[in-house]
Length: 129
Image (cartoon, rainbow, N blue to C red; front, side, top):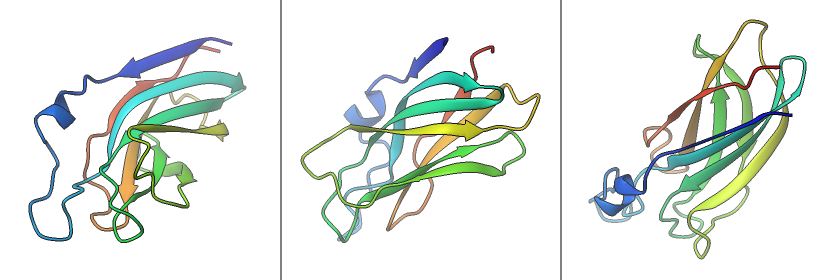
């Protein structure tokens, strides 16, 4: 299978973009910083997504990421069941994501349990099949 790796430099984190300033929300929003995608069958793809978020524990942590189609419809969600305080950034996978026929690009966005969505997203071209 073909694989595409797409990443953004750690500049977002280095410059503190997305960092919250209010007490209790210092972790800021969850940012997608790298995506690997492989073809896994007709209109199906496997994703490896790297998320950066200064998890503070159960009170504030990155709790998932989505694969979103060009029409804004969520195609798949990878739920994250616990904080990753000592593991930043971290990568988790999701296999067999079905996309509608003709879709050549998706958006990957991360979510945290305080801010919801709002951190850095990535637009990813799907590999040819």
